[in-house]
Amino acid sequence: MGGTASNLTRRATVPAPNDIETSKGGIIVHGLVLSTNTQRVLVTLAEKGLKYELKPLKIMESEQKSRQYVEGMQPFGLFPVLIDVDGFKIYESRAICRYLEEKYKGKGTELIPSKDIQARAFFEQAANIEAFNFDPPANALIRETVVKKIFYQKEPDPIKVAQYREDLGSKLNVYENILSKQPYLAGQVYTMADLFHLPCAQFIIKFGDGDLFESRPNVKQWWERISSRPSWKAVQEMK
Ligand SMILES: N[C@@H](CCC(=O)N[C@@H](CS)C(=O)NCC(=O)O)C(=O)O
Image (tube, rainbow, N blue to C red; front, side, top):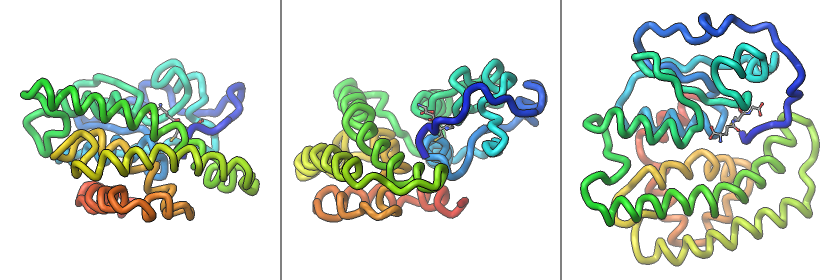
């Protein structure tokens, strides 16, 4: 679920920021299990073996657009937001994931190479591939095929769907080439760059455009490799 065009001027009755933020000393995620950006954080927490509490937002009441939330949690009125055990608060899903990796380095899977400078550079390259090549057309396709239908009860525009499929397909052609030479986007090992793809790719597959992945053998194998990890299965089971 990408950002929706909720009415920014609508104000909901929500708990005061202190109530929203209250932590019993554990990690708190404010978000929704069906949100792509929340799932990105949840799968990172699973890979790191970290316990947390997911506090669902009342989106039907536009809680994320309330003044309390915008002022105290996320200035753009979006989610997820993570509050760490010491009260440290951070938003933007990819930034949250990177923070968790740095903060809990010794725990669970190492998701960002830290010792080898070239491996780290290849990770950054792969993370940028996801952010600037995969995410824009993937999100556009999800907005047209999923968000429009579920949140606005409107049928997808077939011309737009065809355009977004073509945009994403042309990027996945490059993925196909990269993944013919290495099993993961950054090289030989699974990294956070692969993980970042999981939520949007899963939505695209689930809502009828899985052929974009299936029809490219190396992309298909990569998808099977990254989506069969217990961390992602655990997030899927939360729905
Ligand atoms: N770049 C942000 C995007 C956050 C975002 O768009 N979140 C969506 C949920 S997946 C949201 O808050 N939608 C509610 C709205 O637009 O009001 C991130 O990665 O955290």
